[in-house]
Image 1 (spheres, rainbow, N blue to C red):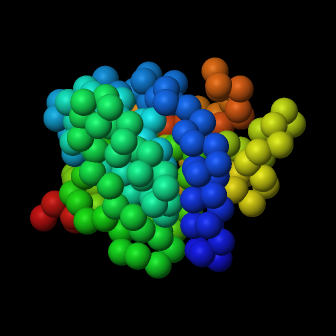
Image 2 (spheres, rainbow, N blue to C red):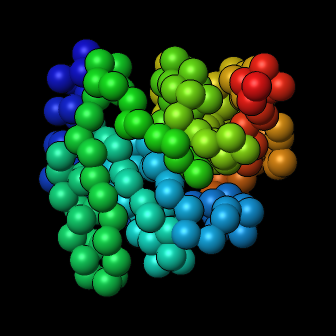
Length: 194
């Protein structure tokens, strides 16, 4: 499965390049909450549209992705933009999650439900998670992503158990997708801090 996923994304990046170089609208909306000079992990960040924008704002950003071709595009675009973005080529199903602690983890349009345990483990205390994923309602207006890669309506809140929700909503985004969007802070239980 991972090889098929890797091949799919490598082929897509070689044939289509980066579909967008603009950061996600929700990221732009919530980035003011990030501490200055944050260490940020961009999960499944592909060609780097969000990572480069964050690096331009003084953050230390690492993209972790399965596609070597996507990461090549990200590296070239970062160089052209005059910033540095670190990259990690990895398969989130088999490779160890990039070790933190991270100040912020960004996950846009990438869903592997088992990763929420890693998000909790690798964020620093009070670290932030930005998560955005289309829901099944998105299929009413858009063919992609297909159903297996969509959240059920209301599922986003369940995935963020253990987080304090700063911004959380589900609906039609300014980018035309029905999505769950959240900025969440990792709650630190008294047991964890003692």
